[in-house]
Length: 169
Image (cartoon, rainbow, N blue to C red; front, side, top):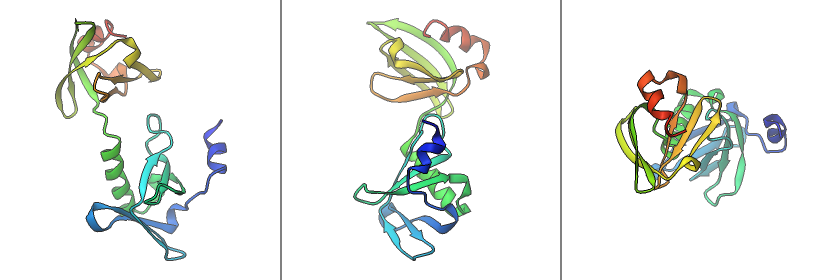
């Protein structure tokens, strides 16, 4: 089903009619600027978390009842956008692999030694079923502990990383 069809069936939240901000105890709140209604302890989630991190933001109240969908994070006011981006970074933290140093077979799994944008990591992967393409050059890797890592663009890796990676995919 096309994304626009999905959105037409959901309750849209107009980006210019709400403010999202931090309220007490690091909770998120949303105020409807037209009605003045305030939702405390809102929960955010992305409808397409792996392929579209800027659009289709699901907003639920503190009891997980859906309030509606915000079509584009970029259309929010600056403060709301920054607040949402910070929350989504916390929820959907997936380190980006920028270099693959080595991949070694050990005890039925493969040990990956990589560099991420946040520093070096070593993790174990069970097999090819834990490695999947989510777009033609966009790779998602899940380790044995359930942590996810991504390579947003295989073409951007250095030649040595590409050579090492060929053994795993």
